[in-house]
Length: 529
Image (tube, rainbow, N blue to C red; front, side, top):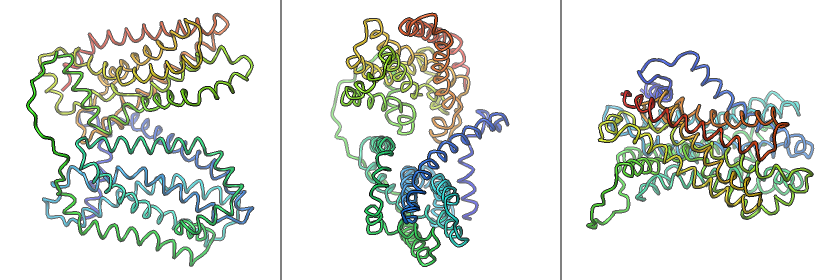
C-alpha cells in the first residue's frame, strides 16, 4: 500500500510534463527541461564546491578536519530545512487530498509514510547538493580510509532525516500560525522573504565569515562541540570514528522517530482539523459599484495577493528593487565614493544603474502564468460581459503596478544619489518603466502561446510551465542584445545617446507586442478552452 501511495505521490510531481491536451510532452521539450534542471544543479554544486575548497585545506592543516565536515553538515541541514518547511506544511498539514484519501480504506500511518518518503527524497537532494562537493574536496585533499568513506556515505543518507524532523516541526508551526490569520498567505510570504533576505545577507558576508573562521578555528570548534553535538559527531564519523558514527546515527534517527510517532498518532486529527481564522464581524456597508476595468484589475490583484506561490515567484524582482532602494539610501554614498575612485567610471554610473534596475525588474513574471492560472475556470472570465482585451489589459496593468512602483522608487533613489544630467536622469526614471511594459507584454504573449489550464496545483502553472520559465530568459535576452548592440556600435555614439536609442527601441517593441495582444492575442484568448 505504501508503495502504491508513494508511486502516486511521485507521479504527481511529473504531471506538469504533459501538454494542455493531456498528451505527453515532446522529446525536445523534455530534453530542454532536463538541461535547465541540470544547469541549476551544476550551478549549486559549483558554488558549494568553491566553499568546500576554501575550507578543507586550512582546517585539515590545523588538525580540525572534523570541523570541516561539521560546518558543511550545518550548511546542508539549513538548506534542506529552509527548502522543506513549506513543502511539509502543504503536504502534511494542508494537503488538499487529505480527506479524499482518508475516506478510502487506507490506514493514516501508511498515508503519512508515503508523504514522509517523498519529503525525505526532497531533503536528500538538498543535502546532497552540499555534501557531494564536500566529499569530493575531502577525497582530493586527504587520503581517507575505506571506513571513512563508508561512514561518509551513510551520513549522506542519515542527515536528511534530521533535516526532515526539524522541517516537520517548523512546518507545523507555520501551518498553525497561518490557520489563525485572516490572510493565510501573509505568513508564508513574510517567512519566505525573510529566509531569502537572510540567505542573501549571509552569502554577501561569506568572505568575511570565512576569514574569521580560519582565524579563530579552535574557538569555533569549541562552540560546535558544545552546542551542536550532532554535527560534532558527524565530523568525527566522517574521519572514520565508528563510535562517533553510532552517536551521529542516533542523533538523526531518534528525532525523526519521535516526530514520526507523534504525527502518526495525530495525523487523522491534523488532516481533518478545521482551524478557524480570526472571525470578522459583519458590518453593513453601502455597495460600491466600479467600472469593469477596475473590477478586473481588483480581481487580478486579489488573486496575486491571495496566492503565496504566485506572489513569491511572480513578484520576486519587486522585493529586490525595494532592497536596492533602501540599500542605496543607506549605504549608497560609501559605495559611490569607492566607485568614483576608479578612473573613467563616472560616465558609466547612471547607465549601469539603469541597467541594474531593468535587470531586477525582469525577474517579475506576473503576466507569464496569469492566463494559465485561470485553469479550468477560464470559461467564467470568458463569459463575462467584457472584451478579451479588457481581460488581458487588466493582467498587463497588474504587472506594471507591481513592477513599476518599486522600479520608480529604486530609480528615484539612484537619481538623487548619482545626480546625472537632465536627459540621463529622465532616462534613468523612464527606461525601466518602458522595459517593464515590454516584459509584461512578452510574458502575456508567451502564456497565450503556451497556456497550461489543466493543472492540479498552482505551482505547476507558476513554476513549471513553459511560459513562466521562458519569460524571464526572454527578458534577459532583450538586455543582452542591447548590451551586445552597444559593444558593436560604441564608436558611433556616446552612452547617453545609446540609452536614448535603446529606450526608443524598447518603446517600439512594447507597442508592437501590446498591439498584437489587443488584436490577434485577444482572438487567441477567446479561442482558448
